[in-house]
Amino acid sequence: MRILVLVLALYAGISAIVPGYAQDVASGEKIFVQCKACHQIGESAKNAVGPVLNGLFGRKAGMIEGYSYSPANKNSGITWDEPTFREYIRDPRAKIPGTKMAFPGLKDPQQIDDIVAYLKQFDSTGKKKAEIVPAARELAKAQ
Image (cartoon, rainbow, N blue to C red; front, side, top):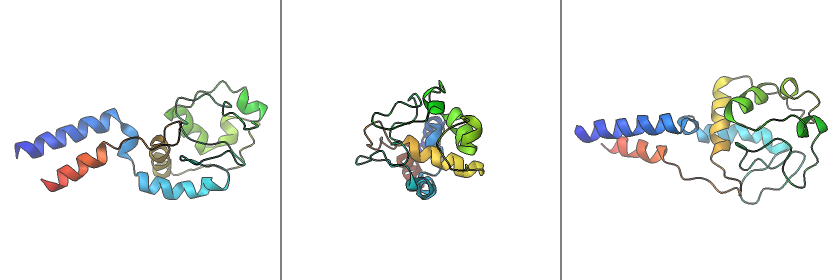
């Protein structure tokens, strides 16, 4: 019983530290299919209609080398963090008027949670970061 309490406390602590992983990464991957028409992510990603999305969070808008951004995006002054991305992905043209992104946006908050979790798992090289929370979940199930 002590171990179960410890595992649950550990899981709660990790979830609080890494909120993006509390969402559903697998669902986020399915939602990303909509994005694949223009964007790539992962180790072999290349710029396409839209820029590569590796290491999105913490990056300044309009800074991926080799991609031709709209002046609106390049001059937006945005550094992509989770709140900014959440606002943007709901309605890209409202957040950055003049952006080339034609996507109408995601309106479902759960889909936004899931796509954030999916995108956050990729570093700037396209490698997936270590997943701590799923391991804690499996340990909790085993108890």
